[in-house]
Length: 134
Image 1 (spheres, one colour):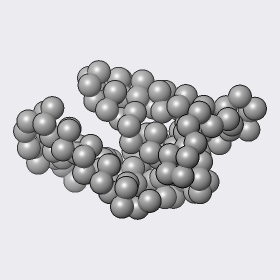
Image 2 (tube, rainbow, N blue to C red):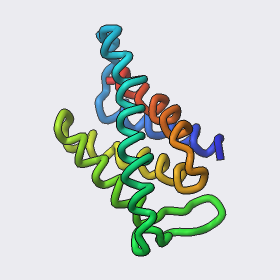
Image 3 (cartoon, rainbow, N blue to C red):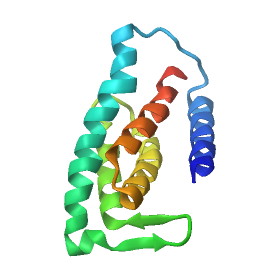
Image 4 (cartoon, one colour):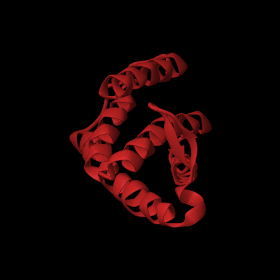
């Protein structure tokens, strides 16, 4: 599972780089802390640790839409991932907001399987490394 996540991350970062076409490393220390520490903690505690957990308690949202050995996506995960994408429209363009839905679905699958928000926070910080590409 870890190898699949790393592969998906590399593909995601490559697509992000292709769409933006630039490298930009002009970030302050506070911005780096924000992207790699504060944002992942705050967003994951709210979207996974609170919202997805509470939605899973509801009968409709606890059902799995896709279920096989490697891929399982719940209604709660899809709903939270769409809200997560929409929340990124505040500071980002539509392409970025749509692209963050993909890692959000992955984080949601990890939360559904392990119910561990710490794993989601760490992986979210890893995903946020793409901010420094483009």
